[in-house]
Length: 386
Image (cartoon, rainbow, N blue to C red; front, top):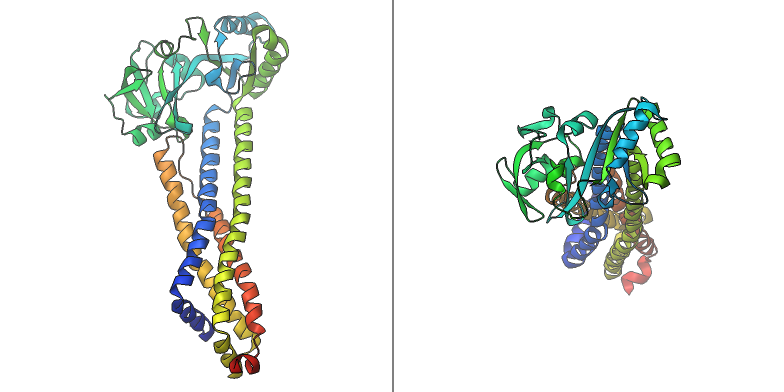
């Protein structure tokens, strides 16, 4: 090991308390960045995987509602759309459709403390989206049109809650039998699917004539664009509905994720400033306490560059050690959040880890720069005698 590095390491060992506090400042200052960036990557991955499943599906919901969970439209809309598909302006554009009711069940896990429950007619869902396709099931069976008091759950939900085939879920005060567990590799695996007639009993707002959404599978992507344009221009106000594709909804989600990522980077800048000040204070105190020692080294032949590098090396060692701790801690936080959540799958991107560790390097450089300059300015004649 180079003598300068060895000397820097030995000096840090002498001041264990100050060194420990400086490392702690680095860990606490930047821990949030790693966890936020890893969770952001995980969220982006989940959104993209889910989008692959429903990329060509159109969702029709109540006009001006932010989320399908709060949407309520009349089933007569289905008849109008099918009529338009047979003889009207949408003739031949609709391949299949599925009517659904969306319901949020309060949960200790799940997004914002809720679990998404989807009421569907199984055969229609399979034709339109295909999540309930038997090929997606790893245990038990899919839902059948004749089911009522039955449910299927995604793997993310099942594993986070310890749910097995034959268990009963309590939803809206009712006990619902679990008959199957599916896996799509997306955040849809955090959801529960039930027969639409069962979910209709959870909320009085949904009668036999109301639903949350209609999902439409167009004949192709061009046909999908025509359906969305026609509904929004001609039926939006008349039927109090609006149409969009899941790509549009996903884009809104990505914008939110981008805001979260920007927030994480802003936190990173603040953390660098706080962490740098802590390292700066620790290293500067060490330099001031060792003025005579540094003066002796310079008198023995150490150059200004060697002295400056030695002090800067102390700062970098603190940042490197602290960086490794907070990097592992940040990953640990992300693992815990994804493990206790039933809507996220952990996705660790190497570039994100490199970017996060870069914060520690920058922090060390800025934190040790001024103390290194002060050490270079020490005069052997003045400070040895002083």
